[in-house]
Amino acid sequence: MPAAEVPVSAELVRRLLGEQHPDLAGLPVEVLANGWDNLVCRLGGEFLVRMPRRAMAAELVVHEQRWLPELAGRLPLPVPAPVRVGQPAAQYPWSWSVVPFFPGRIAARSEPDDRWSTAAALGGFLDALHVPAPSEAPVNASRGIPLAGRAKGVLTGLAQVDPADRATALRVWETAAAMPAWDGPPVWLHGDLHPANLLVDRGRISAVIDFGDITSGDPATDLSVAWMLFTAEQRVALREAYGRADDATWGRARGWALALSLVFLTYSADNPLMRGIGERAFRAVLE
Image (cartoon, rainbow, N blue to C red):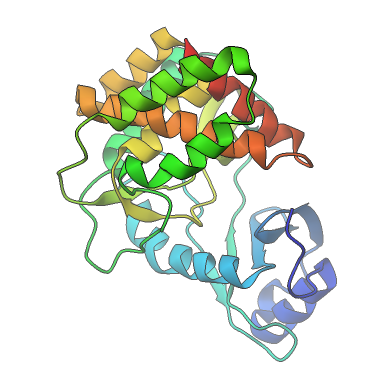
């Protein structure tokens, strides 16, 4: 995991709240996660604070602040649209966010009770999200792009997998890469949709979180989640609820699932949760 480029802590959150949002400053602050991109703190019973720990992540938080309030109202599942925006200060150089707290646990740790209905719910969510994006939507160099742009990373990743799986995985990749490219308008994408960014509460999918990689482009990028959480039969339920994934898009989605599984496997030496997601997706892709 990359090191923080600036010191971040619960104490820093308290100081910034006191300066910029004093009506929230009396709420208890508790660190929940210190991840690749953000320090995430619980703020009282209703909120979270997302504070970038790297310059790259600071840009992503700004994207969430700009676009999530605009998108949230038409999505069928809750998303963490910021309720307050923090400004750069003398002791901290970037914008930061106060977002709603949603109850539940990530799907990577607490699978839904009924994965068929979950697959349908997620397909409906993506159908609502994947509408044409405006020209000023964020651009991501590695998500939403033509699948050919992931070829170098996939071939590098395949060199690290068990030789018994390598030939099958290569055939899957070549089939996906041969699919016609997306020729529709760039659509809104979550950009980083996997089971650690889905919340489950009382056995049901309850929210979609962490839109830092929000971007636009080929919907196949997001549809790759179908191989990260569901069986082949459940993937059919997601595709039917989504309603507009032709065979080429679905084939590219399988290629994206392979590409992302290899990323998770390659860069998860200190993150067994993401390694587990990668292993599950890789096996599903090879079915």
